[in-house]
Amino acid sequence: RVLALDGLERGTARVLGLEPGALLLYDARLDGHLLCWEEEETARRLLQRLPACEMLLLEHVALEEEARARFGFKGGIHCHSCARLSRERVPVGHPLELRPLTTADFDMVWAHYQQLDEAGVRSALAEGRMFGGWLTEGPHSGQMVGFVGIHAEGALGMLYVFERFRRQGLAYAMEGLMINRQLDHHLRVYGQVVVGNETSTRLHRRLGYVFADAPSAWLW
Image 1: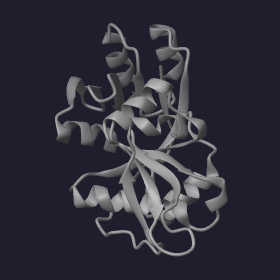
Image 2: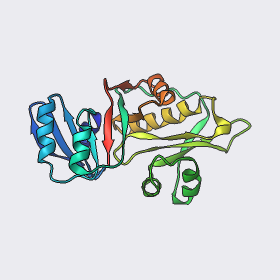
Image 3: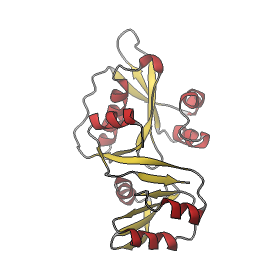
């Protein structure tokens, strides 16, 4: 529920429905809704009161088919929500620094990363939410090894390491630098890992993330 907590703390989310056992929010960062619950029937009642919805995050997948039928969702993905609760910084063992990317880097980013649509990538670049990882020492000093970013809702992600630099611990280093950046800004550290992405799951566990007990569903 860290995404809901983060939205309430930042003032981007507003409560649309709150009953014992369930919470329905609208978050402007997503231009979408979040439904969290412990009591499924209560959550179903809140869902039925929602007149329209273009994007919905369900804390559990149990109500997915009902939500699809009600709002006509065609797309979606299942993710494991995860959060790093420790406030300790990540030791980064590489001479690496993050530098903001710009809209001029769109073609490079888009050639390697298309888990967001084109508009989403352009927005991330325009809003300064994407960073390149640059080596500062050694034979490859001055070269970019990949990129990482912050999704519109505040989750860390968009991590990509160029093939020639893989299996050197640079994914850990870039994500670690992003975690440290969030901590320096007194922000929550959390993410979403697509179900079945075991490489990402292992990386996040090594970085100290803890995972929700069950997957959530993003629907659009």
